Image 1 (cartoon, rainbow, N blue to C red):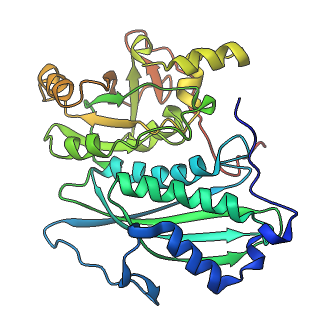
Image 2 (image 1 turned 90 degrees about the vertical axis):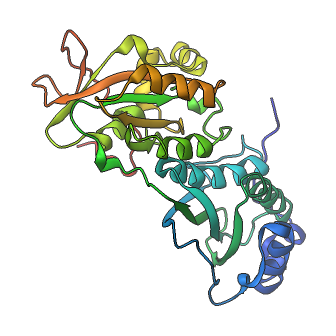
Length: 330
């Protein structure tokens, strides 16, 4: 078991407050190295000036991590930095986009450990280098002691963006990879499906797509058109080994974890009912032989038994929840 690594320290010599904002900004610039270009294309001015390919559409997303919510002392600071970048890249993957540039905002108490922060930025830099992403600016803000958050705003480009609202009744539902039990490690150790998303955006059969961050039970609802349901083959839901392991700990069905855990960061997509599914699946297997793509159901007219039903029997599937901020318990 790896040792816990807390981001805060009581040693004034190691706290970010010792540096002050200007020196800390210089230090962050040094930590990021080549992934942040000089001004005006990067850090150093009021805005970064970016050049885009006018033949492509530009998309923007933002996501954050907060200590005690998305990360804790069980993660190394390097892993936390990678997670921040990969969470955002997963959103681009869901659109079929490629990353272009990003700005990073850091919010911290004065007792943040400089060594922890350096390792965090090492993780940020490593993930950015892997995916050819540039950090072109950002901001710093003070919080009370014992608090840390980091937020990324990310720009990407795509020729044919895949939207959530483009699915139709009759479309087949597919999911990449396996689902469930992300709390055992996948929530921070995953590969954003960028290449897969870009490939799917070039396939005419693919109508709509979303990345699974809040759980299949919640995210699938965002893909369904109005007055429709999902008829699902529960025997085809691709369970991660971690889902089975976590089920043994919680006493809940592994399928419930696949529907409700969240942070799987896989792609959920709708494929036209007019398509040759076997040919589509064969092309996927040829392009991505190490990653499964599983047909899990079909979009059907609204079913009286509920939004998710079992294919064939029509029995209601109860797991329609996932992760929610500020969940109401009334």
